[in-house]
Length: 354
Ligand code: CP3
Image (cartoon, rainbow, N blue to C red; front, side):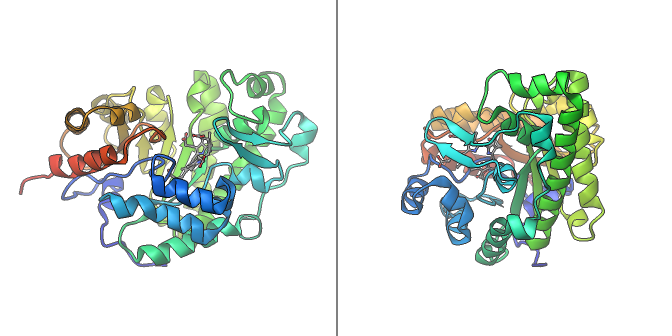
């Protein structure tokens, strides 16, 4: 699994090397807005079967690439595979999101957790990486991913999606040792998991810190950023994983960009509340930036989508180090034709004249 992709725009942009045009991929590019995804899920029976059957995970990973001129594939999986492997009993309910049968309620629950062995407990994910790499045949790079330790902890303690994060915040403020132990276990688990994905063939690694932005300034450093720094240092100690570019995405983290840049990632994902021009100044061009169109733009007309793409490209400005993406995942109600307009607009409007 050492072949370099023929289309290496993404890898080059992440390393802040020159590219012929700006690379683009889209968070949740395989998902419910695609009728062929809904058909595959129907045939599989449910979402988790799709994730746990490498051939089906490969099938849905490839679907958006058949439609759009994307510069990367992203492994079809979910961030909740780690807590599932820890035995929390994951299920997904239509319209409600994920739920755990056995959420973490106490220090004793934390003490009962082990660190999953990626090969033994998450072998289906590694097999999906291998099957997808084979199917891609080096056309574009494959992105592997994990949730951040903090974001995984929120789901494990809340047991489901939440608005107020009351249980996990109770834990960090009233039972700090339990929270610290949980985050330590998760940092180790995520580090091993991403390292195993790199060894199986993932060519870029992304950490989704979807809920880092709900923390206060000091708590963000302690409970989200420091654990992510531990994950990255685990990757840096491995001869294969250390060569794989990394992207850290804290949704709502625009005010912490210099701190995020300092943990040794190659790129930072930005949501749409941050100006990329200001983000570049904040990180002093030390890392690449990924983003950051409001996903809701995809509901607008094709003309409006093109002008919004032009605005994001102009906001980033000239020079290397931009990966175009939405500021969060594409939503289920979007017309796939509008995604094509976006992808084509990024390539057309970003061509650098010789
Ligand atoms: O980006 C991609 O195309 C790869 C696939 C991917 C999924 N989930 C597939 C999925 C990725 C990268 C994720 C990450 C993920 N999962 C995150 C972090 C990114 C983010 O969006 O903030 C989070 C928080 C989750 C947890 C999760 N999984 C939720 C909250 C849900 C329900 C969402 C919903 O819209 O109902 C899921 C399920 C899920 N993961 C779906 C998909 C395509 C929908 C499942 C279905 O109904 O078919």
